[in-house]
Amino acid sequence: MPMSTDSQRVDQPATLATTIYVRLKADILTTRLEPGRKLQSRFLMEQYNVGQTPLREALNRLTTEEFVVGMEQRGFYVKEVSKEELQELTKTRCWVEGLALRESMQNATQTWEEALLVAHHRLDRTPRSLKPDTFEDNPDWERVHRAFHATLIGLCGSRPLLGFCEQLADRLYRYRMMSIAKAYPARKVGAEHSDILQAVLARDSEQAVRLLQQHYQRTADVIYSDLDGLLA
Amino acid sequence: MPMSTDSQRVDQPATLATTIYVRLKADILTTRLEPGRKLQSRFLMEQYNVGQTPLREALNRLTTEEFVVGMEQRGFYVKEVSKEELQELTKTRCWVEGLALRESMQNATQTWEEALLVAHHRLDRTPRSLKPDTFEDNPDWERVHRAFHATLIGLCGSRPLLGFCEQLADRLYRYRMMSIAKAYPARKVGAEHSDILQAVLARDSEQAVRLLQQHYQRTADVIYSDLDGLLA
DNA sequence: TAAAGCAAAAATTTATAAATAATTGTGCGA
DNA sequence: TCGCACAATTATTTATAAATTTTTGCTTTA
Image (cartoon, each protein chain N blue to C red):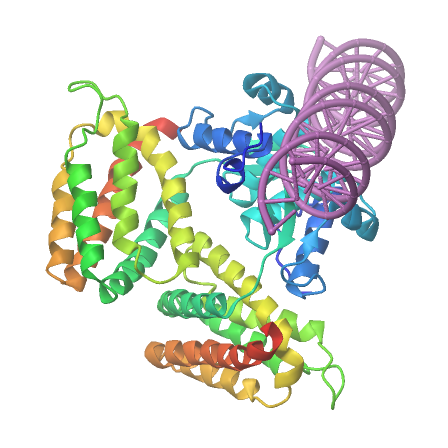
């Protein structure tokens, strides 16, 4: 069974603990496991068909990432959401990605600009919803959307910063999931992405950063008002 | 030890997993567990007198924080150090704490300025080394030093950002530990801290940020040259 | 009668020990 | 020297036991 090619696929989740970690994280971010929910080991064990140990290891990882809150001797809970956190996360993302985009543009290469163009093109031709009228999340869109934003800041030259940005994106994704059905298809996010691309290709850092921050702020504003109903 | 523990789970009763997590983290950051070392469960179990489960949970937490690297089915290792990472971490810290300090100063209050003054005073009167001639790390100094820097950016208004800064501080602390004995007492860090304080009290953001970044960059420069010998 | 204080039981989390699965190292034979 | 099988080591998971918190129900008291 263990072929020589297997040892090279180190990034594949080979352990149960990693598998369950990935699944739990996905379920929390999509709010299939809703904010504040208690994560009882019994429930999770039958839900995901795993033993206690790998489950516990997954929960411990998620705890340091703040997707799960662990109360000593009292079990684990899905991290709560709040309007305050939404604002803090958005503000932080605007600051940090603004910084990262500026740096990235300073290190701009032709290859990078081309990669960005391609990423935007993919985003542009991927439908937001699987159905034209009612909203049904298209996982492909999420993927290419994230790829576009990751490419924007990808040349900033700091892996720690990129990791932090990714975490912010994850944490905000959950908020986006909570109110996405309502906001569709009111907003013209396509245009916003195009504008950002234009500014980057024109090498106008100030404009690009401003547009990117505006993009994040607008997203947050829509969610913010929805959250009134969702948290009441 | 100026180690940071998860504020949420530090309540009253500590589980074994948390205890061992804190101890392991401290031992990694002080390089008592040296970079690259393999963390065999057998060894750690007798070293720290705990079972496999809490140990494993601690290692899993440290993995998401990047203090430990987990190779699927092949065990855990203390994260390696490198000159590249030292530079990236320093660059990132300069960017992010520069940002945070600017924000903090914009939100400045009298209470904050007073707290900063006190923090600096404590730092000023705490000796760097326990012995006057040879260097022996004074844990009190580490504590008040970190408190001073934390106060500087404490009013930035973003808990996620503060958390990220804390992580950067932890990761750089390990590099500092590796070369600290040599650099002592060549540098006048006391003066650097005073200068930063003065600029903040004078409400000169530009100057304060520049001095803070210079402070981090100088620290990194000293370590960088030492690292040649330590990694060769 | 209602409320508060205990005590025991139930449920749940945490830890230990045993079993299973995977990887690494070694020696034999081609 | 290379490849293969086999043994030894190590990591992962399951199963079991211990410790802790929460619930429940009884008793006492105002």
